[in-house]
Length: 353
Image 1 (cartoon, rainbow, N blue to C red):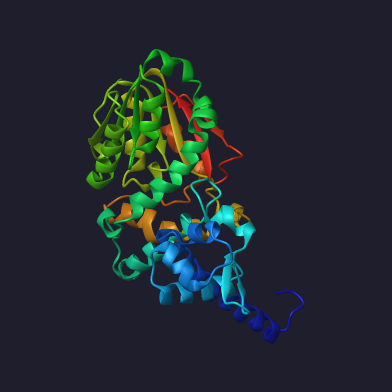
Image 2: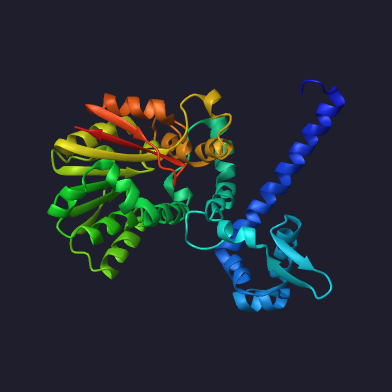
């Protein structure tokens, strides 16, 4: 750093690595706290002992006590030595608890998932190739829980109006969702617009099983889920509206998928693509708060699964500039790039055939 001696710079570098070591470790404990419901348990209790917290969460006290040690030293939990009680600091409740968009504990579940595939990623660095979706048994569920929070809060009131299709949906049109995963967005739309028909496409049978179960529980006769590799989507002029929520950059052959979407739309039809809010230019991402996470999740999942299928390996951080250009190259006559204040992680592309 300017103005520092080499020794001072080395000490700062050491401190930075120690910070990363601590933060990464606490990230794993946050993922555990989310999956075990410990944060919600803490938020519901007055200051309590580790035994009371464990009993309330249905967990083993010794593990809970050690976990609380990590949460205390990280500053999330206050520990009172006089009576050995703990409580979750109130400022952390919204970012660690609940189903709202503020809860970032969901996102930290990616950390242990990436750790599971780390040996395969190291091998790919040496030998090439990549991974397959079967290497990430929880990925669809984690991503679905994140997108569900955004869609529950914003899909009907903020996201859908970007397309200008609300009136047509009320009257009745055909809609497709590409890479639908567990299908919550499709089911939410189908439950709102009873005169329209909805088809969700994905090549994960496990995810589609969840999607179909939700549709059945909500008694939705106007939605169906189809197991399909969308690089082989053979729909011609079938849909008035096609959506894709954080799905295109994972594709082995995204340009082909975008061309298939263009063909699947009726003349005048609309394509809504939601994808990561970042630039295609590395230097413009330097100040992006979540940039390091984006490049990491790309290396461990999005780029890797594309390369593992013999694809282009577009990656999570393909960026707004390249995304808009690829949509135009697929044949779309116009592309608008929009952002929503309530969803800073994503950008919204609205394209018309």
